[in-house]
Amino acid sequence: MSPMLGFEQFIGLAIFVIYFLSIFFLFLLIVQSISERRRALGSVSWSHIGLALASFAHTWYYMLSFMQWSFVEYERNALGGSTEPTLVRVANWLANTALFEQAWTTVCNGPLKWWWSEQLCLFTVGFWTVFLSTKGREFQVRHLWAYMVLGQLVAISVGMNLFFFALPPTARAAVFSTRERTVPPLLWLSVLASLATVLLVPHSLRHDYFLSNLLVMHALLVIPLLPINVGRTGRLHIRTRTLYQLVTLLAVTARLGTTMGIVGGPGMVWAVLKSHPAQASIGWDVLWTTISFLMWVRPGTSTVRRQLTVTVTLALASVFGSIGTSAPLYFWFVDT
Image (cartoon, rainbow, N blue to C red; front, side, top):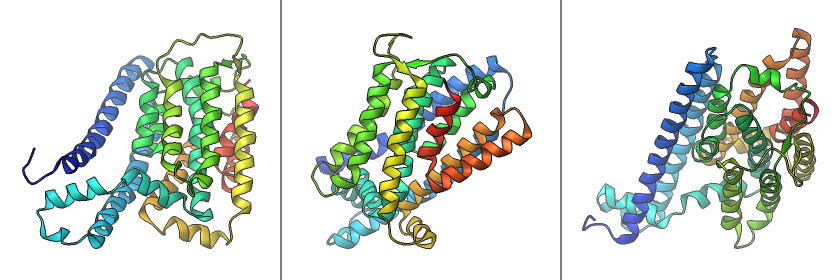
């Protein structure tokens, strides 16, 4: 340990380094597993790799801007920090700043900010967790938990596009299968509990359980994606379509409450997106996620006319409701 750094400063730096090493490890794990699958699957569509790279570059431009903003704000409020060596200044910032909580407080504090952030939360804890678990196991994609954790650490749109790339071309057509599917209680209980934590976020800002509520929300999403053998059928299993119905109804209810609580038109909504780098990062993640989902479901339809109808309907539903409501609604009707 450097003599210039105290224990707290060293721990702060270590966590920061582990964070970036974890991202590198997850990318490596996923890319390696996809490479093995792609050699066997044959057909390759690179559109989702392009979307993953674009969304990563875009959202992380703002994420790095947020870190820079946080560092500058800390030093502005600290006394004499700028006279110390750079490593010590960075270590002091990390030791005295809860970056995770700071970022989430920024993007949740206020109806307009939450209007953006809620979309990504509802999509991730609702539709995306169900889709990742069910389709991942159906098509034997390895390391499902890694896609979710990478999404949480980097951007949901990045993990999502990598997963779309890992799926075989037949996965789109399988969406319209008439075979009845069920999900285990580990999945549907985790999803419903996660949705409850999303509903609690605006209220928890006024209380001391804001951070713990966020941590529970993130943890619950990983549990059903772990390689646990839960069986294909059981007394407590429910139909996949039923779970999509529950997710849709809860998401629509949440969005209606949030949308009715905001003041200001589209101009104010757009201004909030650009108001802070942390807000821009999560807001653009919402938009990249929406684009990526529309790109994936579009080729699954059988005719050009139906392709256009589905794409336009989903796009309008995503604009006026959010991808967190339109995605599970779509699978409500196509996944039996």
